[in-house]
Length: 365
Ligand SMILES: Cc1cc2nc3c(=O)[nH]c(=O)nc-3n(C[C@H](O)[C@H](O)[C@H](O)COP(=O)(O)O)c2cc1C
Image 1 (tube, rainbow, N blue to C red):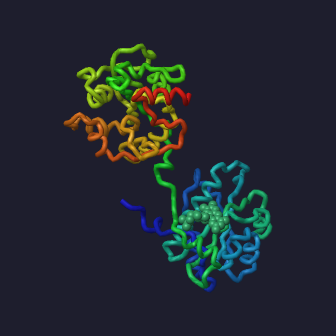
Image 2: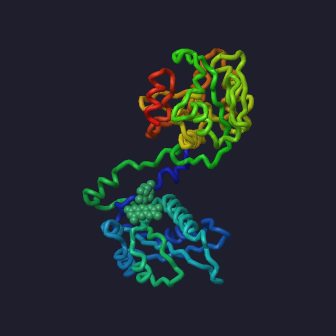
Image 3: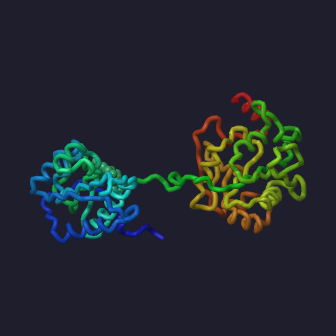
């Protein structure tokens, strides 16, 4: 599914045709579209001041704009000031007023696009000067001046023309989604043989005066349920402990055992040896995963950290159930997790596989 063509094609040009004239019909339709915008409680707090090119008000409004806007906005067939009422007729506040005016501006912009026109919104103006030019009262606050017109006419000066030619960009959706306190559980895999550390109980090793497992549990304190998979240990009372079958059978049976305890729609799956993991990293993973089935931390070299990810429970459980082999990543790759990078220091992906890793981690606390 793609965004509607009207939304996709809308943009805010500056090279407007200085000869194009807006018909009465066109103008009325634009304002009708704005009038039909939704507003809080249908209070309809937006008002409009319209000036057509050639009218004295157009020139006066142009004079109220900041210098950068003044260089091009005079070409607009119409300048429309969107004004919001600070109170209704009874003196009651309209706390959503500016939002409602924004909705009206969006309606007007899209209607313009549908009519083969463009609406370029501007907040670069002197509010008092607009008030004065448009004869607004104390309770009428100018929100935005909209330059309406058709694209065309002589080229803009070099600097503006270059800006105009730049590709339109937006931040990726993953960056815009906040976790919104999504209910999530945490499964911490704390089995393993720690061969390169002489077979010690790795999650029990201390960094900065706290065991590695304690540190991971602290990072995931926001989870509704925290499940630790591995040999029995002394753990906080609210932490669920389970054992993989067979014991020491590796991450796949361990995760299966852990997932059996998960009830939340999201689950973070974590190694127990990440001394610098923190809640912020988990929030970032959960946020990034929202429009996908999962998100995975990648290190500065781009390596995927399979045991530091957030997953949609309803996707992870069947993926793991269907897995034939013993390689966890074979279940996770098809879920196409979004990769999450972080500049955090010390790096949250640092794990403790060797004595050197451990010594390095201890130096950084
Ligand atoms: C409330 C608001 C104020 C804006 N103010 C200005 C402005 O003063 N001058 C300007 O050139 N563009 C202004 N813009 C246009 C934005 O820069 C433009 O919408 C944004 O860069 C995205 O580009 P697009 O509309 O072509 O997608 C404004 C847009 C909005 C919504």
